[in-house]
Image 1 (cartoon, one colour):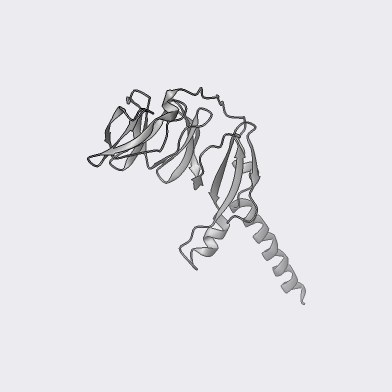
Image 2: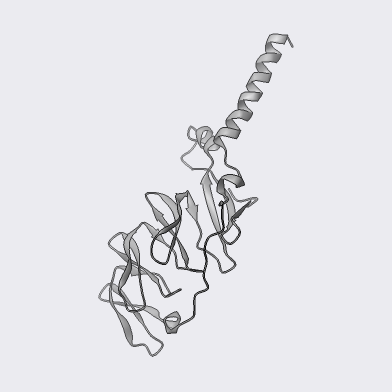
Length: 195
């Protein structure tokens, strides 16, 4: 191989590594600088509320099957947790308290139940984490998120920018790298075998 070809190959490989370093994500990009403030949610009678349907709307009933929150929502999560339940009005999700009062306005495309005082939500195509008042604890920046688990972890996905550039000419699928994020420690761990 001539020295010109060898130099070109070395530059090409070095450029590829620079692109990976610049375009790729690592667990450091996902990890948080500090653990999130979590709180254990006391169990109250609302943990036994079940949703019911009436005239195409959704409400909640207690264990005696008596309506405690009248059916006025287009959809609702299956349960109350941390004193909140996610409800949908038109195409947006928000949260109500155990009296049925809207405590976090309907502004999310997707909403998950609260766990440890936090919930994962989607707005403008990105997922983040809110507290029980609706304030952002983790700004929306993830391609997807699972709900927060009782052990304090949440699975997050980030768009693999290098693969996206490569794949956008091949198929419409968005390649996502997956991580398990421990909200109590702020440490992100790659999830192997999940693409």
